[in-house]
Length: 276
Image (cartoon, rainbow, N blue to C red):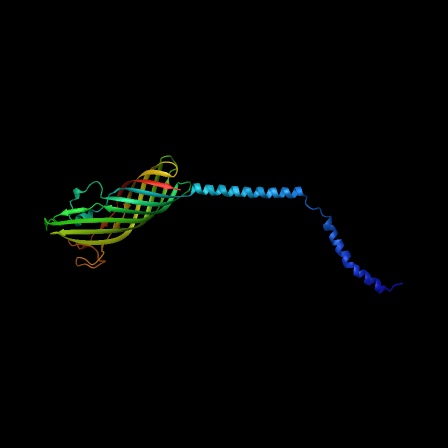
């Protein structure tokens, strides 16, 4: 008869192996996925990925249709409310034509909401037609050998928003707000000698606009009418000139008030635009 201690030690030596076999048995008994079920799962995954890619492409196409960038170039004529300036130089009020200036403008627009709304910056050059007086600006001191020419320009840089109707003949309305930069030059010729005086200033400006556009696709032609508000209360010397220092304002000697330059007025023009 074997001692009890040797029997227990033998059983204890086999115990870990028996426990391991018991744990592995349920795992080996579990059914493994068949080839058919694995193929079905792979097919479902591929279909889901393709559906996701299709949705992304559709979303990108919608964004391209609803969001575009465009460039608009326009040109035309404009009036300027320079009544106080005309009085300052004693210019005959009934000798001006139908308009006072030409303009050239460019807009860069971001179109969205199916092209019904657009916003972006605009730069516009307004070049006034020259005022010329033979004999000097004052009838009191008339000099037949004197000739005075007055040149002006106004450069508004603005940001605006436009609404465009979703119709074949597109109606549009817009509003631009920004800052305008004015330049004024007085060339005086006396006995063949020319002296030039230069002035500059800046002021806030607002411009409203109504118009129509014709065309389909990416190119359009249009007609615009608008009104601009822009008043320069003080025009300053660009350099030291005529006994005045640079930065000093131009004054009317008869009233000792600063000469007001009003660059507001209506405008009419035609434009061509392209978007992508």
